[in-house]
Image (cartoon, rainbow, N blue to C red; front, side, top):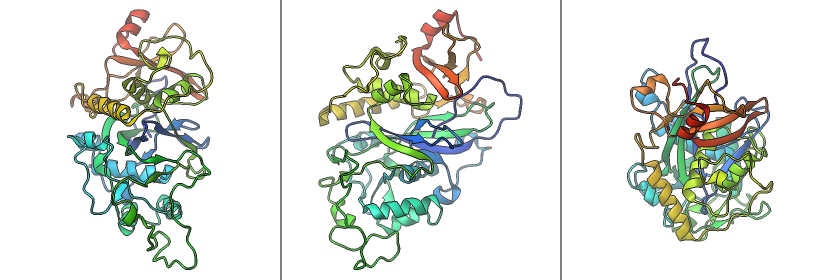
Length: 413
């Protein structure tokens, strides 16, 4: 779910080893982003809105290199990818898997991105709702391995179409630390989106006494099974409504445009932590959504808050516009030195504060172990934030050079 935000203080104890985790920025056919609302009792990010994700499970996802292998442990790997897909399934019900026997679009690091963002993307595996519900609970409770269940229902995890988009490592002085690999995943365009919670998400029957199931996690053999409908393309496939995990970790799941999420955070309606805020900010800028205040269209905006309190109604985008936005995003993630697929963030708090009392988070430095590997973050931007008991508030992205001129320079930490 992303590294925790730093707080004031210094490292007076030995740094805790970060736990490996992964999150996925799931984009709808109209480039809206899925966020989940965390429960108040959560051990990390209570009440915040987060991307689907969680910790790597060696039993479920496979093993990673030892922590002593700095390069391998903090690098994209199959275990991180499987974690992102499994956690997305557990937390939202979205199954990022394709029918067995289909060929992935390509390697996400070199060209799959273009395929992954295209309307003719390979179909997702479609399964009955009751099978999804039962499997989510069983996988969460470790009653069955996710990949074993997928094999049984005729699917494979679509790890090839996950696109790395930054890594976040919790600062060393925090008591609970994570090394989180972030990914992008484009849901296919040209498919029907279900918007009303009362509408059926898939045209499959509920199980009845006449259906013989080989196990409670299997798909019944019937004319409406997914193997016949989903392998022929996206025609007729309906994207499900994102659902919560029945309050275990989340209380709500919703797709909104990146700019709308930012406006909700700026108005104080939701809590976003630095990883989510920065990445949503980048997406909003790249998608260049019209009719929005400068707070989400330019890093240098510094007005107090949006001039309206309700969520704006954003226009729907034709397919070619959606594809242009995806192309812009794909070009961006491959840009930079290092590229955004490799950038590593471990925000550090500057000793100087803004005139309004907000803290300044510098985004250019990774953890010391990765500094020599040129895995730095973003030296051109910084994040303004107000730490409160209720969580981070008044977040804002600014160009760093403008902040330095305003406060008289930022001490190198």
